[in-house]
Length: 131
Image 1 (cartoon, rainbow, N blue to C red):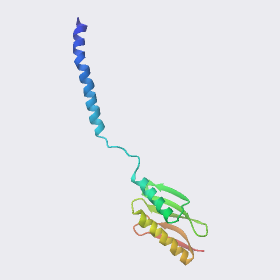
Image 2 (tube, rainbow, N blue to C red):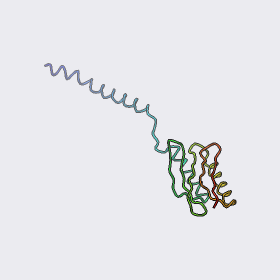
Image 3 (cartoon, one colour):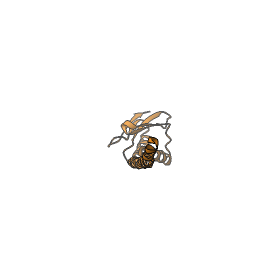
């Protein structure tokens, strides 16, 4: 007899508990934003890569330093030696690649090789060395 009384109490509790679990599950699910695996830094690297391709600059190596918001590129000089280029992931990509093109052009006109290019700073600079 006690089993019959307890089963009468359990019947309405089970659907209510299932409904409560669904409501709480939906509330907690809606609080989390949708996660997108594509970050802005991934698009920056893609933009820089495509701009380098358009500028006919072929980097030998690409290294992303997230903690410094920079991308390190290794490019060949006209004589075949390598030089590093530091590009910012927070500044305009087109401006930086345009500045790199100007630096390469100036080095060719002067007949010098590039030792280092840092476009990560507000005032980018390049170090040239004589042949």
